[in-house]
Length: 356
Image (cartoon, rainbow, N blue to C red; front, side, top):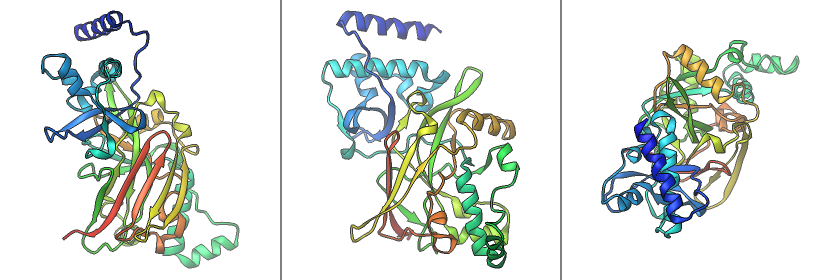
């Protein structure tokens, strides 16, 4: 409480002393490698995707000292992020008034929004659940699929349990690929599929948890391996789904209407031709973000500060739905997969082939 009083007092004195009648809004954070120190640092994303290095501005105002709030996203969002957001707004206002130099996002090494403690991979979009089931039925049970189509479309909708609670599994929270990095495929994987998803950062606010921010997420999936897991091994997804990529922008939830997020996906081939793959929307989500957190917390032993929950694939936004299971691994070495969202920015990765 004392820290809050001091922070808000400093904000008030700053605005009065400089005659600033407004505070510079900060809606989006990122992490990047500081060109001077080589360490990961937090930045505020400003207009034209320019980056304000928050810790550097703070240090310049405080005789070289650093703020613990700005050491990581976890510390920024302590107690829900109220203090962190107030400090970021204060620093951005000062930087704008004094024309503090900004960094070009294309000139720095961008990182994933955070190093997640835990990843819960959900599935909350009805269209994807239905069409994915149909694609796998066509691949693994062609006769039954054909009969089902002849008699009226087939029982491809997910079971009743899918509508009662969020379907999810434990994903890989380590070694995410960041924006503009190459995806190295495991041995034996000659191609791979994409999935357009939304990542949700979970933060603790008092005695409860809430969404601290949203970012683009790509659940890269090897469908050939997934087919074996579904048809033969039958112990859930694991090997086929351990590669992920995360967008560089983390947008605060108060600036995002989750029901109106739209994301386009395209692949840029080695010959520079561009293939538009899909446009996904969040409007057919079966659960709101708040309901997702409640459902998972109830069955997963609670939530933890700094974990990530992915929403699952936006309807129509993966090779499995676009081309069917047999041709779903549509990303080949040399291809570049690019997501673009007006609200959440971009996520771009090139497929570099198998790891040596």
